[in-house]
Image (cartoon, helix red, strand yellow):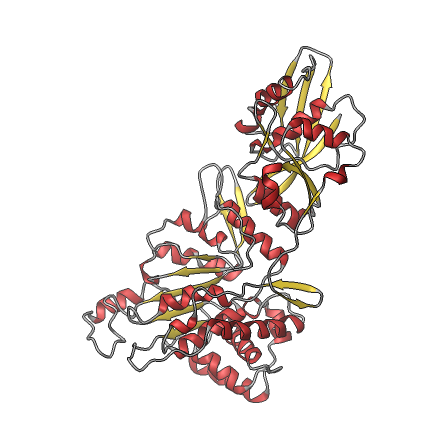
Length: 503
C-alpha cells in the first residue's frame, strides 16, 4: 500500500486527508471509497485517460483508492493528481507519505488549478503546519505570497512523476516570498499594516466627537453605533474605519486571504482588514451562513478579523438583529443543518448607523421632524435592549454646519492606533481591549481610586448590567492607552461613560 496527503473542507477549515491505494490481483476494477463526492468519483475517468495518454499501461488489477478518514465528506477535483501518482508509482520504492499533492488532471495529463486550492492551502498552513506541497505551475505566482512554505510546481503528470523520482527534488523548489508590507516588530512578532489611505478622515468636516469615538473603536475593536440625520457623515466614518485598524499577524493575514478565496475572490494577501456591508434586505442565511446540504459561510464569517457594517440598522429584520447577539458576545457562531454542522470564529468590529427617526430629521436643527411619537417609538423599538447592550460606543452625530472644518487625517489617527496597539501587546495581552475576557479585565483594566468611585456611582445611577460594566472598563482601558497611561484614571472612565447609550 502507498499513500500521500491531500485535504478537504470540514466547515470552513481544511482537514488533511490520506489518499491510500492498493493494487491487488482480481477482476480489473477501479474504485474510490471514503465518502467521496461526484467530482472525486469522476476522477477515475480523468486519471485513466491521463495515464493512457502518456504511454502508461493501466494495470489490469483491482485498484482501490481510499480517502481517510472515511467518515469525513470529501469534495473537489484537486485529488486527481495524487490518485494518478499512486497508480503510476505503485511498483517503485519511492516513499510518498509526507507529500501533500494538489491538482486537477486534464485528459492529456496536464495539471490544472482548482478554485478550492488557495483556501485549502491557506487553512493548512495556518492550522496544520503545512511546509511543502506539489501544486499546479499556474498557481505558483499566487501561492508564493504564503510565507514559510516550499512549493513544487508541475504543469503535467510526467513532471510530477519525474519530480518524485528525482534524488534532489529541492532543486525544483519554489520558495515563498517575504511579506512586502510595513510592520511593527513586538516581542519578535511581526504585525503588518497598510500605510495608504484612499479614504481619509480629513474628508469629514466637524463631527469631532464621532471621529474620536471611531478612533477608540478602531484601537480596541469596540462595537460602535452612530446615530444622526441623513448626510451627516455616518457612512463616511464607517467606510474610513478599515484604513486605521490595528495591524495583523501573519496568521491573521492568511485567515483574511482564505476568506477572500472562500468568497471566490483572488486573495490579495493585503494586511487591510475585511469590510463587509450587507444590505438590510439580505436574508438570514446570507448574513449568518447556511445551505441545505452544506453550510456555507455568510457575511458574519467573512468579516472575521475585520468590520461588519450595518447601515440603516432598524431596517434589518428582528430575526437578523437578535441572531447577531450570539456572534457579538461569543465571537463564534454555529450553523446546524441536517447534513452538516459548522462552527466558525467571528471576531469582528460591529459598526452600525441609524437615523434618529423614520424621516431622519429629529436631531436636525434646521428641519422639522414629520414623525409622530408613536412612529418614533416603533422605529426605535426595533432594537432590543439586549442587542444594544452589546454596543460599546453610542454616538449622536451633530448637524452639519458651514463652519465645520477638517481636523485629523487618517494617517495621524492610524499612528495613534499603532502606538496604542504596541502598548496593548507589550502589556502581555493576546487580544485587543475590546476582546478581553473577564479574567483579563481584572488583570489589565486597573482603575485608580477616583475612577473606581465614579464607576460605583455610575452603576447605581444608570443601573448598568454586568456586560455594560465590563464594556465601560474595556473602553476606558483603550482611552487610557491612547493617552499613554498605565492606569485608568477618572477622566478616562468619564469619557467611556459618555459613550454609553442613554435610555
